[in-house]
Length: 146
Image (cartoon, rainbow, N blue to C red; front, side, top):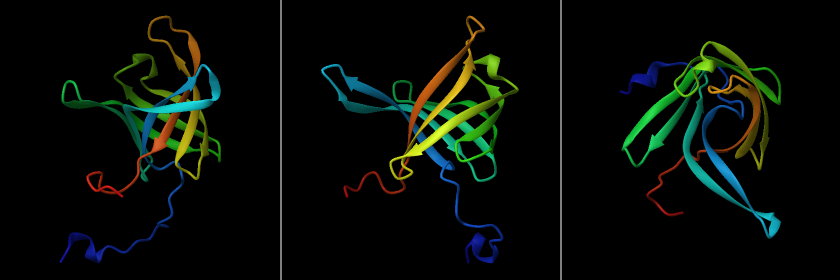
């Protein structure tokens, strides 16, 4: 018998498209052909859990370690806006205990999204608009070629 055999689901199993694991990417445009772009996956991840918590983490191949860089809770406000309530940011102390409004657009059949928000520079203290591109991490076995 498995531990979950007696659990009765009371909540809907359908998740909001924002929920799940996302990997940050860098979009590089070909200078000779602006229509052509290359997507390069970074070692940065964002996990938006069903319970309203989130973490950002970095996987480091070079140092063979991973670190949670930011964590807190989030609230979905609308179809294009959510708020991260940052409890702690190890990469930008200006974001500690800060509520950040993020605008998002989910595209390409819910497999990628663009997020824009304002961040406060840890060096100058000035607010700057940031735009990020993320892809949803697929479920499956990465060692089996489809």
